[in-house]
Amino acid sequence: MDAPNPIEVRALTKRYRSLEALRGVDPTVHPGDVVGFLGRNGAGKSTTIRILMGITQPTGGSVSMFGETLAEVVIPPATNQCFGIHSATVEEAGCNLRCGTA
Image 1 (cartoon, rainbow, N blue to C red):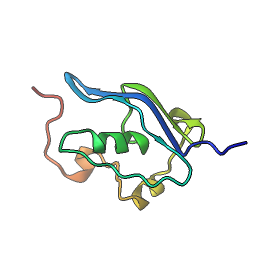
Image 2 (image 1 turned 180 degrees about the vertical axis):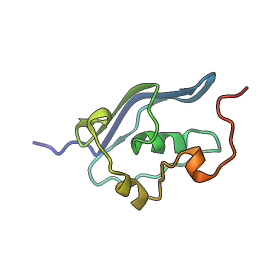
Image 3 (image 1 turned 45 degrees about the horizontal axis):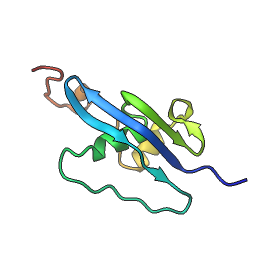
Image 4 (image 1 turned 120 degrees about the vertical axis):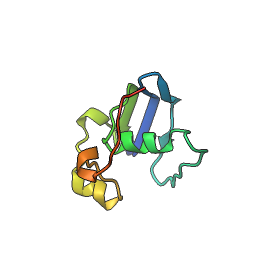
């Protein structure tokens, strides 16, 4: 039996109100693949990574890691921190942002 693909993404979408950040993203990472994300500013690279790390929930589509759907994959915060991804809230980060305002 073949090993499951480390990452399979199907029709991934993410919307922030009227902004469509991702539309129909479909990459598959096969065992042994080396992958990089390239694209212009605003192309959805960070949004895709945040979804893969379980920090942001997708609006639609599916993500599987090693044969398990993203909803079943539990990624401990310590693992995220090893990759330099921190899920601090705006208040914890000390940011002065107003989210969701037009």
